[in-house]
Length: 329
Image (cartoon, rainbow, N blue to C red; front, side):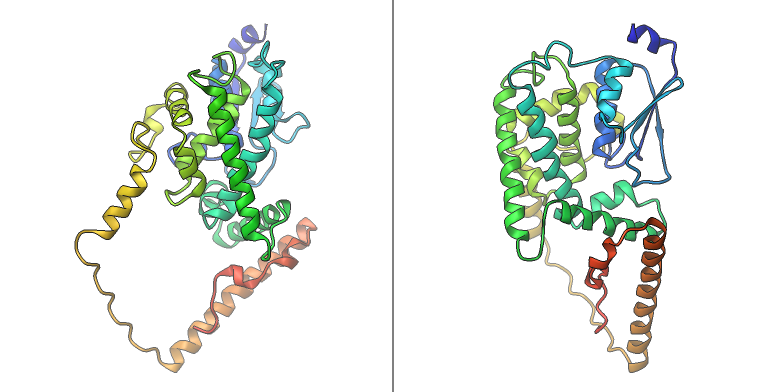
């Protein structure tokens, strides 16, 4: 009945913008996109440029009905209700709940940490805030990064220990998923499910959005079974035209790309020497220092404005060191 209704209904999935060669760079949006592709339901893809930090995105419009990501059940449960349940008959299997917990806790936490903390935050900024004016985008990014730190209980004293714990859990989850997959094409009963949508979205963002220096990406590429899984699923989900020219070669050894890049960086011609900078005059140093104070004053003004408007006090914990300016230069 749901399939018949969908054929006569205009379906639209609203997501964050495409980037990194993916239909959308947002992991939650990409999960919803893949779920609909697995369901073989026709739908239009629309992009929401405003309110990039809204927890309503992604949302799915089916006629007059809308399923938002921030609903109690979440976007996937809304899609099950509106377009059909991919998990029918397999969600009661013994390993289902344990696998779902691995995907939605350990792996979700690891990807969140890598996007916001592990890679200097550049992937997260590009996905969520790069279309906003620079000061506003940076303030919203710092607010979210601070929230991620608080969520994981990360402080200056325990940062290294927390990082090791996050990566250890992610490795355990990758090992468990490799064992579960074996020679199958999908996680359960050799057919796509909502858990495949969650995991494939995770894997594509790890491989496409994270740099080669990413620990999580390197750990993923060490699991040949998971690499094969992504390769065969991706050809059915993401159009080849959407993939960038530097898409990883899944048939190569996991460390080949990183080792090759290291080899290029250490061989060949000698690096060019940087031209010497002219010594700055006292007036130039004073001007640069005043300019930096002016920029920081503008950022503080924006922070205060957003704090009053939104009613949050999280910025009280934000150090000016995070701004990235050295006033002694």
